[in-house]
Length: 82
Image (cartoon, rainbow, N blue to C red; front, side, top):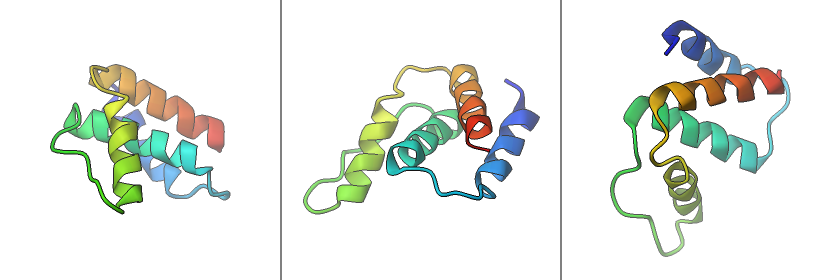
């Protein structure tokens, strides 16, 4: 995995001129978590924690994806937004 390219993409994601859609933000979050922490852990938030549940679900969709593939997908997604 090209750690420098991933770190640059993370920095770039914080300076986007337009706010991406919620779906894209969730995808960025999920890919970032998959790269930095691996597969989703813990229990899915319930009740009225809609944001927490959406983030958990997005991350869970990445389950099994290796760090390199997740990092490359993250980098490509950030580059497509800028």
